[in-house]
Figure 1 (cartoon, rainbow, N blue to C red):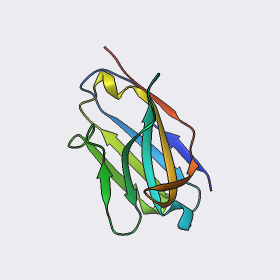
Figure 2: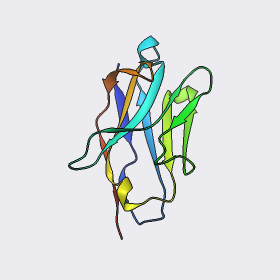
Figure 3: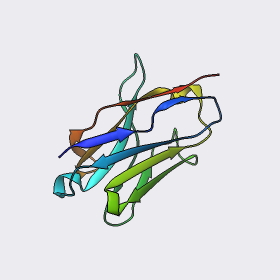
Amino acid sequence: VQLQASGGGSVQPGGSLKLSCTVSERTPRTSAVAWFRQAPGREREFVGGMTWTGGMRYYADSVKGRSTISIDDAKNTVSLQVNGLKSEDSAVYYCASGLTLSNFSTWGQGTLVTVSS
């Protein structure tokens, strides 16, 4: 199983970004897909996640209300859109997959998001 993350870049405060994570194959090990981020000097933190079945979406409080997770079943892609970006959203964003949202076994490469004026 491989995860391919894309969509990072530089954005001004208040802007939006859409990050995408493409899963190479749908297996039990990719039942759940989530986004994490890690800023310099800080621990990695959960941003949001979903399961392919059930339609559940989960968001960290830091992005709740300004983020949306969407899926494209045909492309095995999970996307995270974050609106109203703030400087504290700057980080390397990683997608991960696993059996559940508390058990991740595969990680994609990170994609850098920089929010700056």
